[in-house]
Image (cartoon, rainbow, N blue to C red):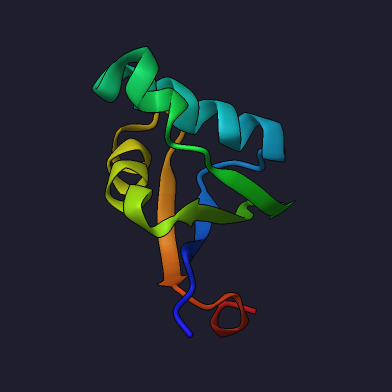
Length: 89
């Protein structure tokens, strides 16, 4: 059974709340893909503790998310990624 979501464990340069992580991704996505492209990204911040956050995105939107993470104003670095949540915990 294949998962339709992809999970990313990211690290931030400073301690950020889940809302701030999500907002940083949205701003970066809007600058790359415009309003409509960013609106369809639908990233879920499942957990945010200290400088780490766990993200979930539909597998078809993974490349867009990765591009947004690369260009986000807040330094966001992918530590691990997997189609299985269990692999990251």
